[in-house]
Image (cartoon, rainbow, N blue to C red; front, side):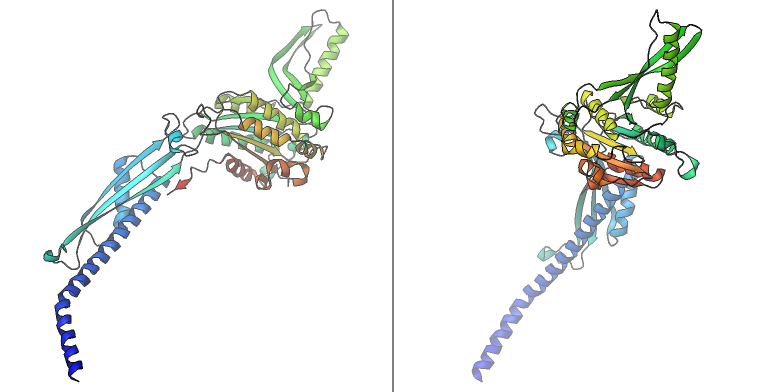
Amino acid sequence: MRTIRKNRGVAGILFIGLLPIMVIFMAFSMQMSQQMLAHARVLEAAEVASLALIASPKESEDENVKYARQLVDRYVVDNINDVDVEVYTRKCEYKDGCVQASGEVAPFSDFVVSAKAEHKSWIAYEEAELKPEFEVAGKSVTRKYLPQPVDVYFIGDFSGSMNGHWKGGKTKLDVVKQTIERVVEDIENFNTEEKSRVALLGYNPLHVKQTGTVYLNAYGYRRSWPKKVAYDYARGTTAQTVAKMFDPPSVYSRVQEYVRGMSRHDVKNLVVNNDRFVDYYKFYDIPLTEDYTNFKSRLANASLGAEGGTSSWNGIIAAAQEANRATNINPEQVFIVLSDGADNDTNYLQRLVNQGLCTKLRSTISAKRNRFQSKTGSAGKTKVTMGVIGVDYRVKESDGFGDCFGRKNIYHAKDGDDVYKYILNLINEETGRLKD
């Protein structure tokens, strides 16, 4: 019993001796917990503010700061004095070498929000360095990848079925033309470092280019026709077609020009043949350009019409050649087929794909140096995206589109809004991506 009483006495003495330390430790723990909680709230507030501002920036830095402070005040509620909030942005672009040095794949903008708040301590004890007030600070950086300039190749179906009426009483061709115009206006408003460019490559059974005008004034005829040439990119075999896909195509037919000395009979035949030609080949390509006004004007021309059958590979190869000829290309190359029906030869595209048509297109164009690539090619490599949009038509993967474009890039548009949405998906503008 004496031993137990002795031990209790020792324990009591130890407890009394350690009690001040325990109290100080408890007070210190409470203050640390308070500071950690306050710090977490400031960090969370800064993160929410940076995300909100990068999604919807204000017109001036003062307004950004005011908006950020309002958001921070919602989270930090037990502070003394006003929360000190700072907001600034920093851009990283190709032209200053920042993108290359950062190792990122695209230009970006960082939105930085920092906040600093003062709080009263729950417990203060100067002798133990437990201050009556403390300060916490937090900073959040939200990264938004900026839209990159793109080269977009619209590969349009100009077969006769595109004259069929769609929703709203408009023809499918009119809806597609108006949707492309809408997309071009969006591209025009993209805040990119360099301008994006657009091209239109059309097809029915063939592909058609137009340059200038052909005039006739002979034997009582005073006529003019657009100077058009119809090309066929198919060779003797599918293997030859793919092997020579970047070679000049074969001329299938053209608008004929008057040659001095022609007989009246020859001139009459010229008139008949030219009328027949322009009536069947009502479309033409618009080469890659950043002159959006001219592009939209040519696109809206009433003479840009549809007729005949369908051979999508002529449009695809024409777009590949257009991209291969282009210089100073943008880092994003986007090929978009817009079609309302299967090719007349439903197996030909698949046979071309089996011979490597789409693989060769991708490898050739992605190997081209774009305007932002370093001399070593180590940053900003050219990217090729391909997709097909069925205009009121469910594209069959087995027609060659599945193996060429990939299943995820095959779309079925039920109306014009779908066409617009899917084009933007393929261009991948997305108003920028966020990265915390």
